Image (cartoon, rainbow, N blue to C red; front, side, top):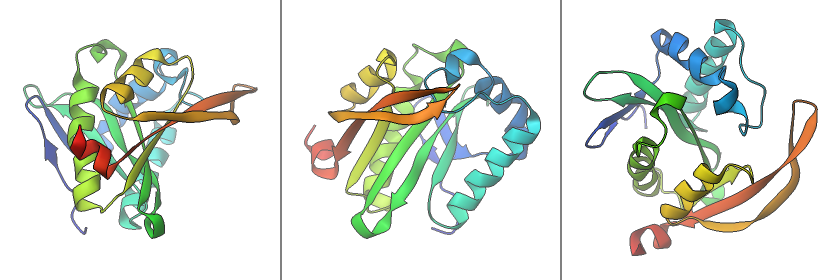
Amino acid sequence: MEKFPELSTKRLRLRELRESDAPVLLSIFSNPHTMRYYGSEKMTGIEEIEGMLMSFKQGFEKKQAIRFGIELKETGELIGTCGFHNWAKRVNRIEMGYELNQEKEGKGYMSEALSAMIPFAFQQLNIHRIGALIHPNNDSSRKLVKNLGFREEGVLRDYVYTGGVYMDLIMYSILTKEWYKA
């Protein structure tokens, strides 16, 4: 995959992130509500966002990851990101992550975005298994992946360290055959 793909749904465009997205991304990644289950500290400056954007770009260029900006078709507003990382090509396994502007939660946008992104991984990236690591208290994210057909596999105890404390994460996954059976 040489060119960054663009995915489309009824209301959304999943596209490559740009440097001009940095201010919006800072508002998302600096929001304590959004970052409370993220597994890393909230971001505090544009420089951190620019570094993250560079990391996303390098991940794509090295074919190790892909991160989409989630844009509303109607207005062109960037409302979040979603993507894949920790790509283990030898075993066709990948993990997904996502975040959304707090004001856009509860409107079905992330479900819509992931419903486009997941088959892209199975069909275009030849992925067999998609995993998602979710904080036990993140009820909305747990519900989201369950509604998409992911299965809970178990707890990864003290898996991340952020804010001076260790946190458990729950592993969820879906296999190609499960997605197309649903």
